[in-house]
Length: 514
Image (cartoon, rainbow, N blue to C red):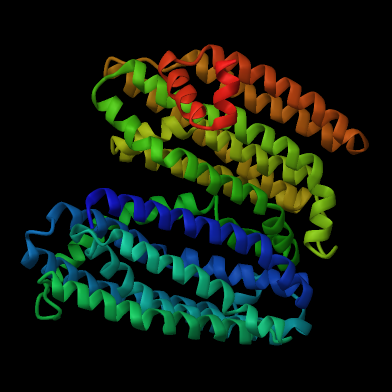
């Protein structure tokens, strides 16, 4: 397979996996809520969040190794073998540590308050949750702690796309497997067992495939090729990355771990369900902006101001012309759709929905600045911003959730995104100036105006829900004016490329010529 074919295949696998995730988020929630109470579903979500947070140490280690394997390259097979098996030895120990931490949480009695459960009537449910959590921790130790390292060791040999397609099957299997017992009327324990069994069954052929490919490429399949000193050195170097990932995770899955004890599993389930739209928007944003980021980095390295601004302009066009009207349309129609979607079991909170949606827009606005920081490995600045935004989330949640409920969690998240965005922008602006480039201030202001438009009209829909559709019409007119204003100020290069793409679409081509 050629390099181009591998890139296309890997990108397609990523798109398919994101599509499966979006479909599962939309389709599976009504099924769960048709058979389980909101409280049981909330505990199920909390378990998944706990597993994600507790495996951060492993995932940071694996991500660090991924870059190390790529630096070593496919030609240095002996060096790669030593790093691989040294790291697998460490991965087995860190995976065991994570299982022991989970066991400590389960058997110390900490799990009940962590799930927000205080009633003795739910003691059996908490017991089942503990078994499921421990089972998932053991399965991760057996499969994920080792498998994640093996996957990354194959990337230098051009198997990234192949492993991505294995990931697609993983998403399908682990989404469907728990549904079978749920539809049959079973509870949390049976769903957890089904997911564990499916994970093992899926990993068996994948492990066989990975070992076969490593053997084919001449990589040693033996623990004799290891150095404990090297393995632990790589691990300690990865701790900074793990810490950064843990802090950033507080704004994603990690917030469930904090929210459950503060508000209870039922409220946490409501928060997570209302946040589904925002999560889908984030995933959609990634599919639109990620392909542009390598190009942006190339223009930054070439100190090409015009093409850099063109890349910035394309990213912000996604925010201004796609995400902003999308958020406003959802704000208007979500109350009616949400009731049908959740079978009326979860009450829709329009204010929380608006706050979470605005968080997505703020995150989208920060994308170019984030790319400058990440692409240039400004690790110290990234860590500082991650710490500050995590502190804002924690302080905001512990202060506001007891006062105003899950809306307080939404406010804390939005505040953290604003702090992070401002930090990214300041660091990126400074870096550009130091390297003879300029921040595209005018385009940035229009992108900021787009977020402001969404804020004003979303707030009006929350305050005057009976006039939501009228407000929507007015808001879309305002968005249209802003899009036109932005379009006129885009770099000529972006306009030419966009027109070229549109002309390839028969109807649009005729309109442009007219």
